[in-house]
Length: 285
Image (cartoon, rainbow, N blue to C red; front, side, top):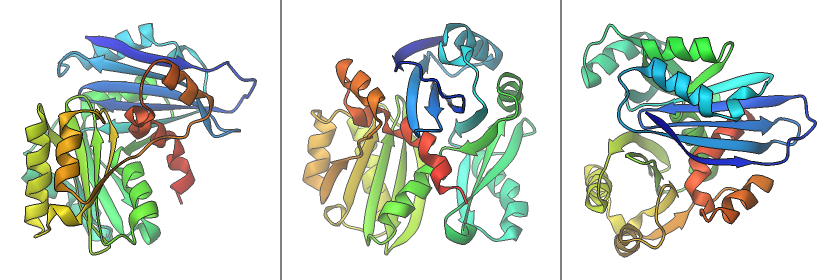
């Protein structure tokens, strides 16, 4: 049910202050160890879930059995959920109360989910409200006690706002094995963050062009940044370069682990979405 796709390990350091960073999604499970003294990732593992799990207890158990990282002691744990049931709202206190109703309107009523939220941006002007299946959240608490929890939208948006808030227009694509996260900035304002399932290049192009059309934007006026499981030599990259203003890869600079990735034959932008989770603490107020 869970297969280890990659594992990168640097020489174990003598540091005593290490942080475990975990991402849990519908199709993947990633974990890494960050040396908080050097701010470098020292180990990384990515597991692929064969299908949408029905028994998450089996998933957690299998990953614990096959993971080298999860056998190690870390002084702190940060957990990120990567599920599509999330929405961005203005950061007023009243929206925290209304978030559950808004999510129910979008994704349907559910008695089996927990409501969570992250405050984003300077002065917490944005609220990312999300819900997580209660059984997953309870298992996470059992396997990763005393963890700090966020949605992957939080570090993604903080990073984009830090680097691109002054851009007139900007689109970010973050690719995973079966879904992508799309972020749009227009007129220096964050307009959209949303997850989309995809199977083909045509699916991706549809979501991008439809988003541009919704905001009355010409694709040729939008610079695009891409990270994750994206083939820079593939047809999709060629199509994007023809339709959009520019296409740039968001590549990590991750110390010794980057050399391990290069030696294994992977481009560094493949793992940028995961490694940036380890940097999120730098932006937490």
